[in-house]
Length: 315
Image (spheres, rainbow, N blue to C red):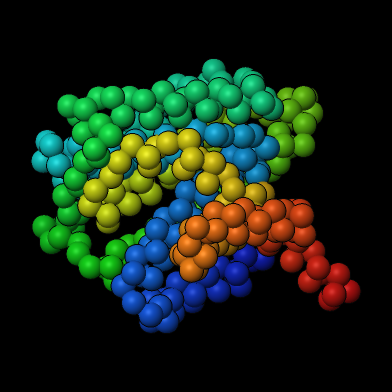
């Protein structure tokens, strides 16, 4: 049963809310605010993906496909056919959920690297469809997206989009924190520990895995739609393999199974390249070295490792 905020999560959730409220007043310019919006939307996707990967112990190397479906649903339905932006966003979420459900019932019978390859295959199929259906998607050249409208008024300006993204992230975080405290969340943990053991105690493993896969796909789709409306132009790369890998890196760096770890990992991986531009030709090299150092020094991810060290210090 959902509660307002789990007791042990009240303080960190309040801290996140305060940080989101303060951030736009501390950022130096509109460019930094735009990076913050992208980081927040990535964080919402990462929270959903972390429920599937970190909590349920599964793997997805094609999750950007759902982000791309949401983005192109926004572009095609609102731009080409004139649908309201909210309707386009909802349609993208439904399409992503249906695809995740249809594919999940088959591929989630697999595990390990076989599941990784299957999810990668789903991502590649979606990417190729977007890239080649030039009449609908614009193909490699991309597609323009009209402004998002609320009650007839267009959402314009970085500040307005920042608050929309921030509210979305808070809702997703609240939902994830509640989910892991429910019986369904404990079922995810049981499946992560042992699928055979979970079946032995009566858990419908297939239904639970499919359900969390659908939920993570829907969250990615909504974030993709918001991203498309905010940017105003999208390309097939938003549904590509590199985007999927980037999402996985976010949750690994932040900490698998940690809601706030997923958020921190998304913020770091999105913002860090902007701080490394001063290295010019060595930007990617420095970025890779930093990821290696984090992986070696904080093997469980940033948030779980720091939480363990803090608990030891407190004792």
